[in-house]
Length: 77
Image 1 (cartoon, rainbow, N blue to C red):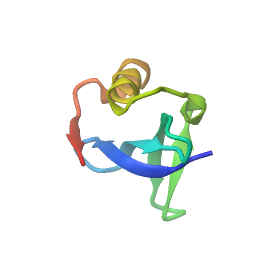
Image 2: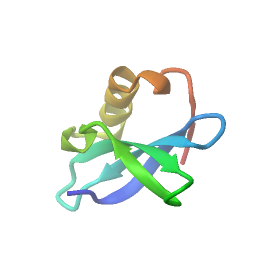
Image 3: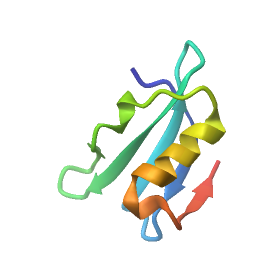
Image 4: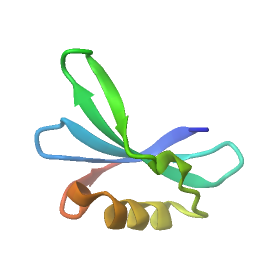
């Protein structure tokens, strides 16, 4: 289950993003999302929401290591 988004990493044209979120019980996870203009919606890619880490830093490192396009993108708070 997702929680509050605490950090995001975007691609240059803002059509992809990874959201890092903190769950209510304190663990962190992330989700890779792609914008679908036809649906006007963000669509999850992969099954990354199942990732569970104990800190924001570990969740960011895991996202950078597991989602190919994220390796060199900028981060936003």
